[in-house]
Amino acid sequence: MVKTIYHLIWFEYVRYALKEIVEDIFKENSKKSTGNTFILLVGFTHSGKETLVKNNKQLREMFLVHSDEIHVYLNESLRFLRDDNTITGEAYWERQFLTHIVRKMLLRRAFKSNINVVNDSANLRKRDRSTKLALAKKYGYQTIIIQVQCPESVLLKRLEDSDNKKSDLDQSSNWVALYATQKSRFCPVKGNEADRVIHYHSDFLKPEYLRI
Image (cartoon, rainbow, N blue to C red; front, side, top):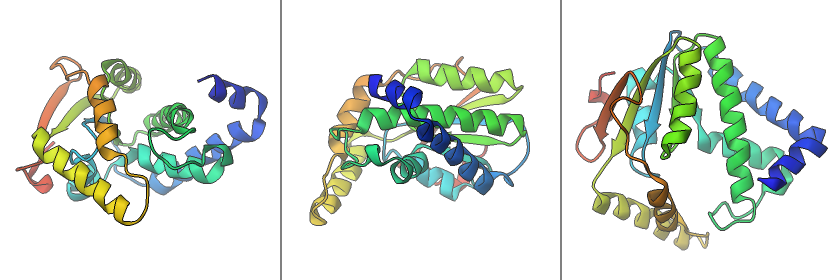
């Protein structure tokens, strides 16, 4: 956090880069469906969130705020963030903090434009969820949480397969380790956190069958 504050205060190009990232991502998504629905996805990495968004027509037509996409933009724009992209990389936490800032800027921009929004990130801590949901409510949005889940055995198999693929390519493998970190931070979703809470089981329900 200290490094993030230092870069933001003393380096104008960092602040400029964040604004440019917001503009670029917003332009790519500005023609999405109009409305006042905000959907917050909750779930561990590889639980099926991205697959759900890609294969569900309603979600696919919304403005997608996706942490992985923000990571890519940040890595390309800011040289000091380039590391091995693992949870032990020296830039991991600074990338997380900057992603949080960009995400909030994107959400504000989308809400002001009356675009339906889906936020695809882990959103495991209640405090983080509450902040985003409160922001949506400020702009008059209906809030929906979709908790994407599957049995732990299924999730671990997906993570292990991804780690094995990385190992085969001589890349750092960290998916199982990331799950351990995420699991320690997870706060179960309560029914009163949003206007609606939907539990989606990715191991047996096909994405196209989910109705919002």
